[in-house]
Length: 400
Image 1 (spheres, rainbow, N blue to C red):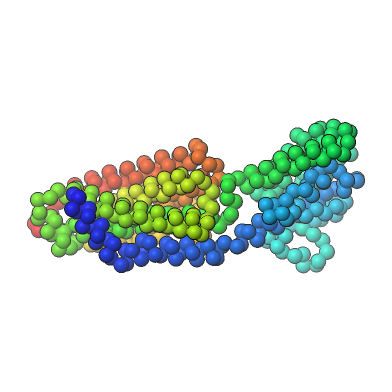
Image 2: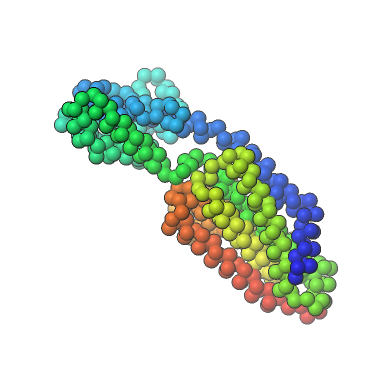
């Protein structure tokens, strides 16, 4: 089997098309993603969230001072505060809610057509008794951050009030402590280490590389089948076990794909500095399991019936391309649509499972959801190889 492994590994590296699609193409596509999306999030994430504040003597209120001190990592202000009456604030909020491009308005990217009335994502009302209330138009990420800030402030309001009685120095220290808590709330409000909405494209890129292993396995295993090639005729007539041939071939493909994956991860994480939002060992583990699952898919499809290579390759292409579309390779939002309409599809689609593992690692860290994705990958991999082995044993040839 070692000779079979060595022979096919050399053959793979000598096949220019396999090397291009397995290694060069993902690096090119990753570079295009980087240059296309690299600066967009950095520009968006530093835009201030527009809010309206209502209440008497609002400008000197302790909570307003805390809001004014909130900044992004680059030092820019998080909040764009407008002081208004209740009626004016309601108009601003309704204008934001009725705007079809609300997301852009939230980030301050869409100027008001009339140049007068601002759009705001929420109204913070400072009550006479010291209570703070929040009114929002929609319930999305930014409104959730505001809700967290208000809740955090309420928990610290008594501390600020007591500190104010002890003097300006005590109040300044308390306000600094509260501001740090607010920044933590803002950081956690979007969840995850990397909140970049474009990082899922890189998850899908890795998933695509995993699925490319299925194509390489298909090419190699089908070449061993007597009804598909002259090499298959010789293999079938030899005394070597078919299973031994297939194991040697799959190990060769696995080695090649792991080398390609390692190169891609070094390039994306080390050179392009893409933040996948998780620990590197866990990222590597997910990628390795993804490659194994890709090999299992190719092994299964290679043993479906006695079709020609062209037919089997078409079946595999439909599975991988369709799975890529569903997992969000071409449009990230499509995965959420499928999740709402038919969640079972995302549970059995290999590319969706891989991207979900990366997403879980980024958003929630190493926890229950991540381990659920890993277990699903292991189960699918075992099922694909097992079913492929059963079909392989059933394929018998009366004459060669």
